[in-house]
Image 1 (tube, rainbow over the protein chains, first blue to last red):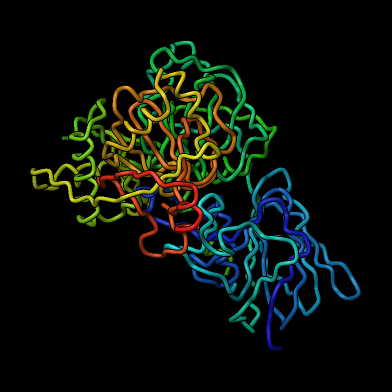
Image 2: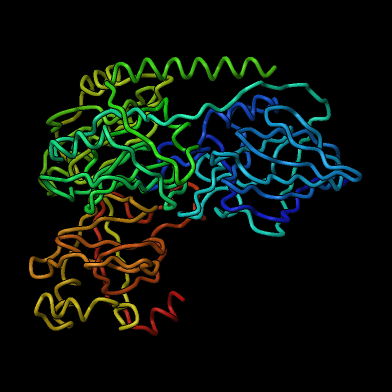
Length: 315
Length: 224
């Protein structure tokens, strides 16, 4: 067959191409971007036998519905995703974390993520998409990356090339564990807040509001009272930074965050808890737990070992 | 130079150059930024200069806070401060449809709009940093008589390429974005060019900017 492609029948809410993001452009205002849940991203590529950093399709809450045209291709879905493959004479219920097949005219319906936010679609082939500033990752704010920096659009075509003909029975038994406690290292402006506010921050629960996307999470809970300055001279941010707005609400910076900001930083989410934090859906409550740097480093090493172990189990 | 280095979470260094905002401190930050970039310390993933802070992000799979901190402290830098920035001229059209907040400023500053523009266009501005959104430059310092506070309620959408003022600073909204700065005009130039794959930013930290006024017909004809 001359060409292989997906036709987008339904784009989903916020569907983008992502790889592991771009480095070294914070100073011109461009954040990392990249797959929000890095563990599920690397597992998807491992199951596909792709290179570690190959771009995948990331979707949020409701995924896309795609019609496939072309030669037989294998794919897998990671995360906690309800999906179906609509074939010529039957409907197959999708199973995450294993290679499945798509034939000409089959339809892949990534219906929804289950009590989570992000899911990933990887194919044993490559998407024919553009690269910008060392990455395929879409940043819709700066309009850069694959797909002209835009989310998937209805009726668009996604071309596919370099299809792997050989099937490999890669699969993984994995359940995405959910967490409620998010571990946090105190930030440089921790002492801008009143004694009561500091206690509330680590004692009370905060609700993830609907004002949450790839840029950040806006939380709702007790007001965190600032006793020094509610604005600082704007300075750099990193993903996971928790700023307190002038109204006393915490906002957590995520992968597409503005590179600088002018609110005081009360804390930063530890690297090991980031993948799980971004998967907590709006409406859920979370609690912050204080931790020191040394423990955070140890926990990250264990988390990374666990990820590598999961990758080796896929083969 | 650096007054203190602490951690920002488990994967970044927070280098503090003090609390003041002035060109000297900022040139220190920029010099430090350029030197660290050249040093190729393994594991660094991003360096973010701002008015008086420098944040260095790193990959926890390659290095950690103690290692990077020691490496940064041991770097030998030239002490002389050289501003290697470029001079960039930016056209601005101040027609009423673009100068969204000029009436507010006339009232707030107790100045006629002609005087506001005269003061604004007569100075050259220094780029302290770029960011927040891709390519947005933070420029200063405005003449004292132009200091104005932010809008009480920020706009949900500031049009792309608007020029805004607040306190001693001015900026250019490189993309349509929410924002609370006082808008006095619009440039026809694209400050961030997302088709340029090597150097998309027209203005970089350390550059000097001079604005010049153009008419609406020039805006439309020459640059349209």
